Length: 425
Ligand code: NAD
Image (cartoon, rainbow, N blue to C red; front, side, top):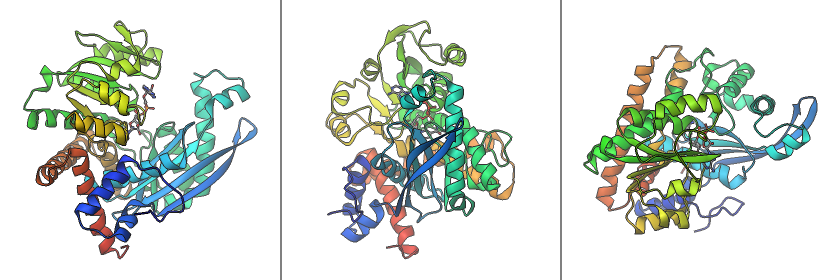
């Protein structure tokens, strides 16, 4: 059945799995389209003042689904942003908030920033972090001026994603003067949440430990792990899994990777990265990112970019379990290969949902001005993640489907129910 949006989206993992679920749930074509298609997509151009010069940045705002609560999703500044990626990421947010059973929907903003062109234009080096912050802030300032009304009315509640962070969220707060209009705010900004920064990585570590114990009937401290990406998510996954006793033998970032069969000292690596800005140069064997994905480990955790495991990479995976800490790191074709090889995957909508669950806590704290401790936040994240994983495992067993399809099915049931109740279907 054809989607009714006036552009032809490629068939992605989320669309394919959502349509599968709708079929199993007996929904009509019209209902299926209403759930899968975005409710609204806006294309825009932002003329921004970058160091006294006007530069125009194109972007997409996708409001995918608000049946269960305000549209929720991060602001991504990246050279590869396009309409398909933004719509896909917004749809994944709809699934993630629903499987976590929190009162948000799904949205996303993608703004295309051609960094190489900007570095040339302004005669800057490609690692000039200060310049990148100046650019990011002028874009977000303009973006907040244009869309501030959506945030102030809590129609869409944005958050950081690749290329933005707490500093940019503070700019949104400056525009709206409303702590509940944005999450992921910097420490000290009204409504900021202790534990938000760690929540995604810690959640990935918890959900992996739970799966290892309950499904694989093993102990995390006996297993080896490789992690791609050492940014906010990857570094916290590594830190917490290391503290849980797992042996982290491979870690990479965009500049290169490390391998140590005896286990990488993650505490020392964190200090190295704080000084050097990359894992490269730490004492261990050097490996490439593609070698990292095919290491002979028990658990592989992609925690960086999307679509890094396609058909070829999936054929080479040696891990016994993959945990999607990044958003959509495995393509639809890649999933088919992994399924045919019976390699289980804990899906992104469950594995990395600690971040959005903490965002719900931040939103609720911002609305009420009631304080939360880090322990309060971690306890909610843990409880929600356990429920999502156990709920999806139950659906997987009942329907005899893999965990990724089961997570989507749980989410689709909830979105459908809310759309029905709100007469959106
Ligand atoms: P980040 O920008 O802090 O870190 C990204 C890391 O990945 C860096 O170490 C970078 O060097 C590395 N990297 C980038 N491209 C790479 C590549 N092609 N190969 C290898 N390494 C590469 O970003 P983050 O916040 O850690 O987010 C990582 C992923 O997790 C993204 O997919 C993001 O959408 C997803 N995610 C983040 C959160 C959150 O709370 N930050 C929540 C849910 C999902």
